[in-house]
Image (cartoon, rainbow, N blue to C red; front, side, top):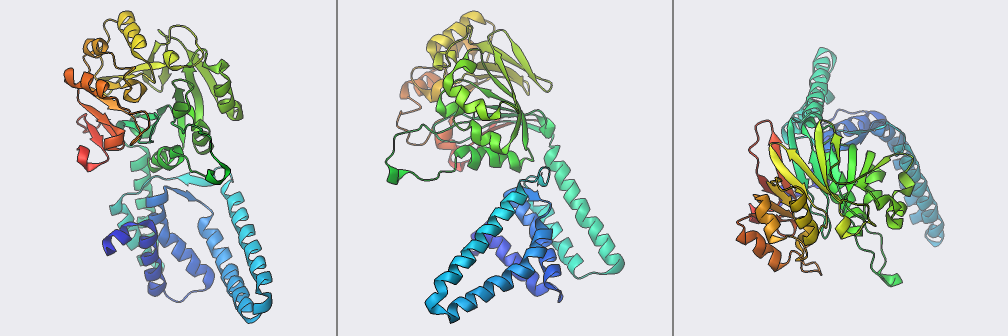
Length: 433
C-alpha cells in the first residue's frame, strides 16, 4: 500500500517535502521556500510535464506573507466566534484574489516550459543532487549546481529529440483521435480530436466536464515535450471526430487545419474554427492531392468531390510511415471503400484505421482482401450505445486473418518505428498484450 502511495503524485511529493524540511539547515522562510521548490521540481515534471519559470520565485515571495496572514485570520475567527463568518468571507476573498493572480501570471507568454515526462533515474539523481546542494557550500556547491543543471539538460534533450517515431491511437471513448509523431518530435500531425455528442440534459444533470482531449491527448503531448503541432487533419464534421478541437487548440499551438474540400462551408465546422481563424490556416483537399508534414508526404484518397462533411465525405489519408503503409479512413463507409479500391487498384495497406469505429456500415470484405491488410486498429468506447465494433466487422477481419486491436479492450494503441524499434502494436492494458 505504501508503494502505491509513493507512486502517486501527492504521496511522493508529501514525503519529499517532509524530508526536505527535516533535512535542510535552518533558513529564513524565503530560502526554505526556494529549496523546497527546487527539490519538488523534478517530481512536478514527472507528473505535470510543464514548469512555469516564476514558480520558485513566487513561492518564495508568497509563502512568508500568505501563511502568517491566513493562520492569523484563522486564530482571529476562532476567538471571535460570533462574527467569524466575516473573517471567513475575508479569507475566501484573499484566496480567490491569490488564485486569480496566479492564473494571470500563468498566462504570461513564453513563461511556461513544456519539459516533458522526466524519467525515474534522472529524477532520482536530481533529487540527490539537490539535497547535496542544500548541505553544500563553496566549491562543492559549484560542482553540485553543474551536475544538477547537466541532468536537466540531458533529460530535456532526450525527451525533445527522441529518435523514435510513433503512430498513436488515443483511448478517448467513442470517437477518433490519432497522432503521427515523427522522430525527433518535429512536425507532428493529429488526425481528428475526438469529442462528446451533445445530448439533451436537465439542468440538474449539467456539470463541468473535462474533455477527454484535455485529459488524454493534451497530457500525452505535454509528456512528450510537445506544445505545438504542425497540423490537425479533420476527417469530417461529426462531433466525435472534431468536437474537442477547441480544447486542443486552447492548450496546443497549431499551424494548419487540414480538411476535405466542402467542409469549410459546413456551419458546424465554421462554429468550431471561428475562434482560431487568426492563428491557423485552413487547407481543403480532394483525392489525388497530397500535403507535407515536415518530410512526410500524406496522400489524400478521398473525397473525390466537395461535400457537406458527412460520413461519405470523410477525408481519407494514406502514408508510408516507417516502411509500412497506413490508411486512415475517418467514418468512410463500404461504398467509399469500394470506390478507393477502384480508383487506386495498386494500393496495399499494412495497417488500417477501421472505418466508422467498426460499424457494420464500413469494412467491406472485398476491400479488406484487396488491400491485403496486416493489422487493423479500432477506436470505440467501452460499452458504447452503438454496439461498436459490430460482430459482422470483427468476423470480416477474422475471415481475412487480420489481427485487430480495439481501444475499448486494449486502451491506447502505440506503433513505434525508427531507432532500434521492431514495428509492432503495443497496448496500454496488459490483458491485450
